[in-house]
Amino acid sequence: MDEATTSTAVLEQEEWAITNAHHNIVTRGLWLDETLARHRAELSTLTCGDIEVRYVVNGVDVDLDVQQIRRIMRWLHESYRVSKRLEKQTRPARDALLERLTAQRVMPSEMALMAGVDQSVAERFAGDETEARIARNLLHQLGTTSTRRS
Image 1 (cartoon, rainbow, N blue to C red):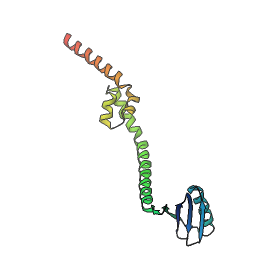
Image 2: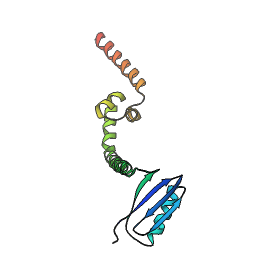
Image 3: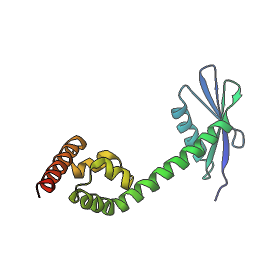
């Protein structure tokens, strides 16, 4: 398997020049995406390895900053993917709990507080918060009135 090769993409005077010194290829263009695609196509005839790209913008080497942000973005995307998978796996248990709490007349804001879910999720099970507050208030008043009469 071929080893990775490194190219340097330089933006100077509103034009990209991507150079791979090892394979003596220079690709020029106005738009990075198009120029990079052509550069990769040219290199593909010479190497099967990965093509790493370093970046220089108007004489300033920004590659370390670019790579740092890329690492962070990869981590964020992976974390998001994992969290979505876990959320999907735990959704049935979450929904069952919210249904049980709804049957016990727990209010949406209380469900959100108890279970750590967003209140809008709890409201899908228990209805609108304002209506739930009115209902609880009425039930409480009815319960208080009936115990006073007894």
